[in-house]
Image 1 (spheres, rainbow, N blue to C red):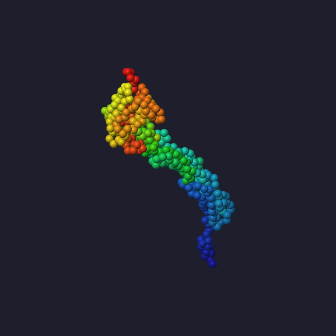
Image 2: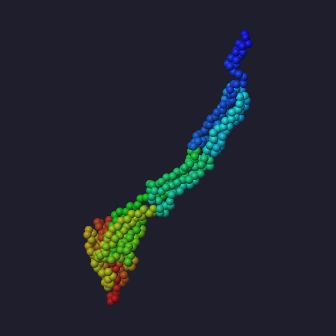
Length: 371
């Protein structure tokens, strides 16, 4: 073989086998996995295990650092990384994990507050916003319960929670409020005028306090409060006859809800004799106008503040005697100031169905010859 032919064969061999020193380097390949309970916003809500995988690519390994197959991170952290470094005869590879954020601890709901003070006492009577607040040491609070309460009425037991940025939820925190947006019931409101008196009746809810205002009022007042309480009727005394009075009955509950009804009443002279303030020297006959539908009447006689007589005549009159028995005691018509009242009765006496007060008057018993 000639020298030229030998050189050509050598070059071809070099081309096929590769020239010395030109082979590609193959350093290790390093990958990893993160295993744990995934939370919100890239956080973990449990301990995290870092799993390293090293491929030396068929090249002789030399050393590794931090490349254990399972590295556990248990503590809460706002951000940490782990690094694996591997070396073979062709080079070194160093790989770090992404930022690992762990929050395994639920936030704490620390308080709850209403958006405004109660409307009356401890009661709210309209929609009320309520918001909860809390704290979280690691990922921070993302949101807490916020709501608008619109009922039902009554004591309300609410609860709210807070959620952190990792998705952990706090234990519920209770919040109590009293709510009443419903006015009390008020019905059957009537006013009946009598002789210098008006009888006002109503039916109100059990939770209501009633105020009755009369116009015209006492003296020169345009209106006066004549009743405040939890009853169901009032007899308004000391009125002028032949006057139209207007009564406003208002029922209010503890929350400040109120309902009002206005009714008129006209007084008129229904008691005939004795005349108002008459001075008598002998036992008088009490007379009044007949009330339609009444089957009997109840007449009550007081001397000062003490009741001394109660009778049930069927006619619109009653003779007061010089002496009588009442309450097991013998009474007599002694000199003094007396006031009498008349009510109409309906149905059987045992039913105790009485109408509005017919009227009330005062007379004075004097000794014969006294002025």
